[in-house]
Length: 97
Image (cartoon, rainbow, N blue to C red):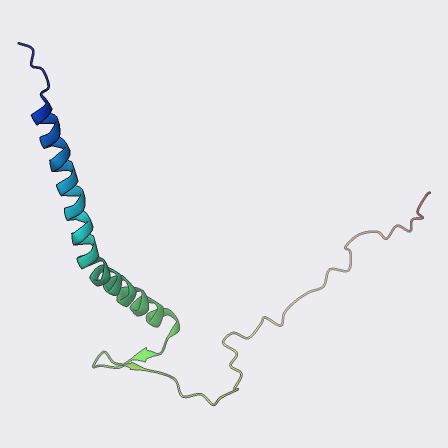
């Protein structure tokens, strides 16, 4: 049994697609700011855990007290560097024109 597409069926399908499209746009405008706020808050927490201050027992952050302009060195470089005297042979050359 073969069914033919009718004009009313086509219009109804297009109308349903448009309603779904506009419904999704309206929902996106409502929920996008909430979603962005949530994502920004999570990123701020992760950044704070890595680079920010410490957290006390109540979960509040405490920043280290530093004077303005103070230089802080977190890692002291290894002082046991050995220079390799036998790097290679020096070859003197002249440019040819």
